[in-house]
Image (cartoon, rainbow, N blue to C red):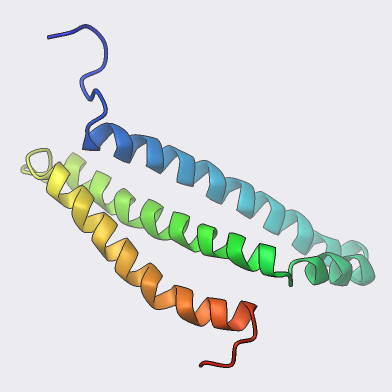
Length: 125
């Protein structure tokens, strides 16, 4: 067996990498959210100006990425819990990864059209 990591680009490694990336992205979103919400106490006008900049199509698309990150991170977190506390979790970790991807994709596909309709004022829903 070659020296180095056990994963070598398999599902477990990619799950680990995606979990870290989505966790950091969610952290930075929450940091910005706390900071811009704190503006309301300092200056309601500044708060309104900042919130106004969020009502753009670019931010609307970024929100799609945020929702995708939250869905994956939450569901993969449940997968990690099952791996840690379920006796057969390690055996089924690959299958559970693809279940996480499937559920996250299904939930995302349910959210995305309605959100895009709202962002671009399409009037479909």
